[in-house]
Amino acid sequence: AFDQYIKSVLDNTQALEQGLKSGGAKLVTESETHLSLIELPSNVDSLELQKNLEDCGIVTNRNSIPNESRTAWRPSGLRLGMPALTSRGISQAQAKELGGVIAGAISKRMSDKAILSYSSSLAVSLKWWY
Picture 1: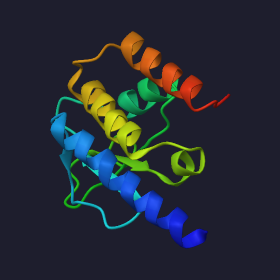
Picture 2: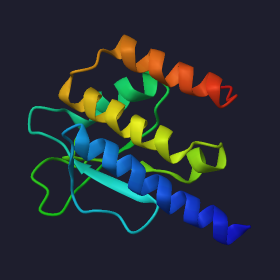
Picture 3: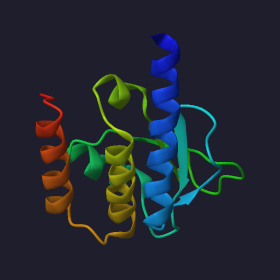
C-alpha cells in the first residue's frame, strides 16, 4: 500500500509540473521527489503570491532558489508539494490542471476569483472540507 501511495505522489508531482510548464511557469529543475520548485518572474512578489494563493485555498511556500538574488523573506521561488493532496485523493489529471491554475496565478492570466472558483470546485469534487 505504501509503495503505491509513493508512486501516486511522484506521478502527481510530475503531472503538476506538466501543468505548470504548459502554463508557462519556469521550474528550477524537474522533480524526482514529492516537491516542485518554481522560479518566479522578477515582477512577481513571492510573499504576495503565496498569500493570494492561500486566500484561494492553495497552500504553497515561498522558497529560495539556487543563486538567489532576493531576500529570504521575499525569495525568487515558490515550493509546492503533493503528498497531502495525494492523500486527499487528487488524480493526475487534476494535479496537471492545478499546475495550470497556479501558472495562471503567477502570470496573472487568472483572477483571484477564477482561482478560488477552481479550488472550491476541486474541493467539492473530492469531498474535501476546510
